[in-house]
Length: 273
Image 1 (cartoon, rainbow, N blue to C red):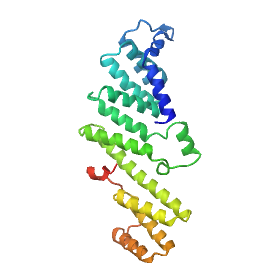
Image 2 (cartoon, rainbow, N blue to C red; image 1 turned 180 degrees about the vertical axis):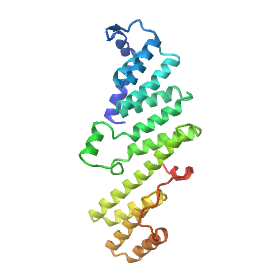
Image 3 (cartoon, helix red, strand yellow; image 1 turned 90 degrees about the vertical axis):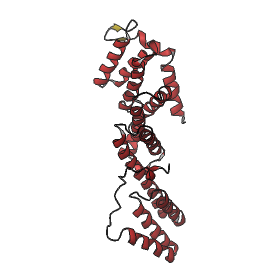
């Protein structure tokens, strides 16, 4: 866990402990919340979410749980905190809140929603300041970034559809898994192309071979074969180049476009992680 993640975890732990009672004495619109009922806290939090004031909503929900730590309102407040952090573009905090809910309520009827939100948070990790800089100023595609977040998002979605095969979030989770697996495969292609530019042709071949072995049904397979053909040409390995060309001709005889993305609901294609 990174320093930032540990700091966020500590911050939330403090919020959810006795320090959260400080919010019970705060004022909003001239009202003292010290004598509020659980319904009042929840109503104010929901109102803030509807109005897009997610920071204030998080405060009310955390205060609710601190004052009324048991029962359905406390559990619902924890769900709302996950959503509010996500909408606030604080993806790290959303993931921490999701993990906490899963740990506390593994059999909750809405835990599939939490797995889904956890996957979304990792999926949209580029949101926020760091992601904005990478996308706006560095023009960096998702496949060119560190695949850690993509793998974590994939794992959350996979856990969702494995544990809750009838979840209403399954169809969208499968589509996102499909996108993620292709994105990670193209990330390997990006690295292989970098190796070619550096003249590291053996490394480029190894990376392309890895794509063919680990991601055989993704859109990156044709790119991997092209890299192998180019690299073997530079290395003077004409026999291996010809073998790669034969595989290319057999699999892509006329279509110059890479194969379609995986759309099957079959589990076999995503079990390699």
